[in-house]
Image (tube, rainbow, N blue to C red):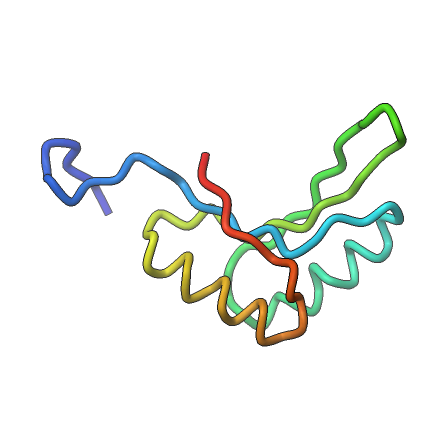
Length: 88
């Protein structure tokens, strides 16, 4: 789908649903697998912090805010109460 940046409804943000962050990558991988049923691309991204590595599970990119909110609700209902929507 091509987006017209001149359309007043155009939003340049790209949304992700962060389901959780984990010290152990294998825990993040398990969450990634459990979220596969939602049909969104789920990725594990490992980031390096001063306190050690952290693996976060994010769904997306999602280009529609309404769909991102709906996906967040589904993730929360699956038991990931701390999930959050983030925009890039």
